[in-house]
Amino acid sequence: MFMKSKSQMPKSEDALAGREQSMPVPAKHAVNGHPLEAPFPAEMKIAMFGLGCFWGAERKFWETTGVYSTAVGYAAGHTPNPTYQEVCSGQTGHNEVVLVVYDPTILGYEDLLQVFWQSHNPTQGMRQGNDAGTQYRSGIYTYGEEQQKLAEASKRHYQQALLSAGFNSITTEILSAPEFYYAEDYHQQYLAKNPSGYCGLGGTGVTYPK
Image 1 (cartoon, rainbow, N blue to C red):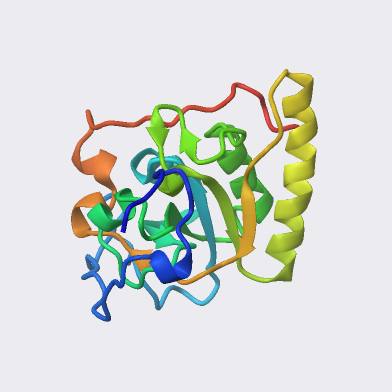
Image 2: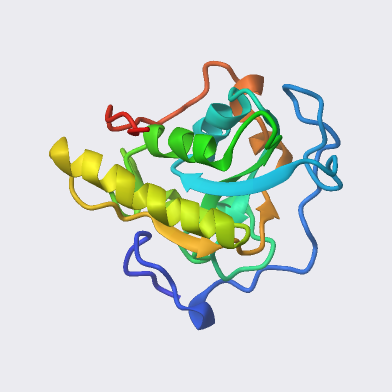
């Protein structure tokens, strides 16, 4: 298959076949020691975001008070259980995403949305800064009707602030949460394991208005 561009979503029939075997998942979060996969404590809720390279994106969330655990992976594409190399080829359609497990008694979903909007530039389409490709697109993947409504309202809210600051229209996709495929072990909490590692994440400098 010949891709015209890594920034062009492949059709499902053209995507890589993938595999049935899922990626092994580390038992514990490298920063806080909590589990990376369910079951989580009953009171916890989950959210999913894509905002560019998932190394820096994950750190933004694990540093947020009230977040119980985070994990990086792939979602919103076609290929089952993809590898990092396959995602980077542009032939799976997946986005690099962060799964966020949070305590709603400490942290609201609106607070996570604020972290999301302020941590990247959501007007760039299939890229984030110098990172270009479908896996770097901006996306909010919602669990339930309440998250969907809050995400859409926050997009409209932040759009006005961005337009006032001279930015273009938001390109963020807001979808019901698709299946989350865990990324390889070495990607999990990458910047905690590699403090001087690459992070291309950068916001617009526009504060999310409360």
